Image (cartoon, rainbow, N blue to C red):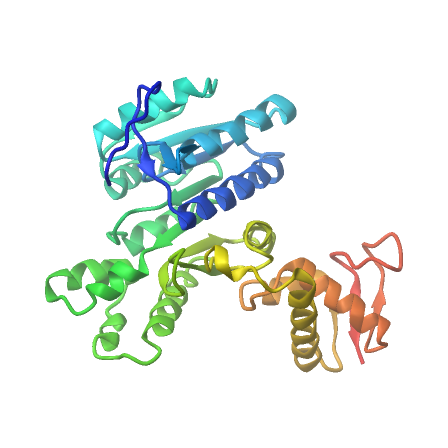
Length: 358
């Protein structure tokens, strides 16, 4: 990636693209909440596994990368809520590490991260070997330029209790090289199987089949797996997918809400030109779809609200708040009854409230 220099700064920048900005905004929002919630009970680790150079520029405006944005969020939580978080940055290029150190110093960040130079896969496995997997709950942000990601390493990471992964699945590059024989073993390691080979000669539905296979593989060791499509900012074509792996449904729900916050209420990035439909129109369409879905799935059933969320949160493109609001409409329409258990008022719908579908 080309280096950009700017007067008055002793470090270099990379060009900032729309989808990268979105990714960083979502990451910062989520990690802030992760630290607040999980950090109540545990000391935490944050691993930025492809640290990059730490600084970006767009139209002469300066932005900072994931290590800096997360460190600032962590620092606020340490100051205000006494949360304890170790930040570890892995980066292969020594030049980028030196640049990152300058960016941290420039931003006057008190937190001192641990810098590890080298290959992500090698370094992570050494850490897991030396600790026997006995790490504090850890959030792993894995954002490579390519696709040399080892499925078995992801599996090892997810065996660390209460840990999560936010992973860039570089679909464009994978799709481009799918038929190249020289990288078959690399793709076998990525998918953790050789089933992807059937897609070599496939054109119809190939993209969906590839991400479906990858999600199915990840679901073997992560209870909740949801993927977010990231388009090129100037055309409706997939650039890559971001996969979020967690073993708690609340994590999945909060990540989806973070995406929606920065992207017109949607859980995919389609570029700046795709926010034309009003949120009110989107909500009306969404709530109708959700109501039909719930009525069909839970006909003549009684189920707690939290169980509805747990069963569906990584299967449907709806937020927890969308499902709650759709249920409120169904109650107003007399299609369901709600027995409040967690809610303090009859207007709310909370975790253990019993939903009775007539």
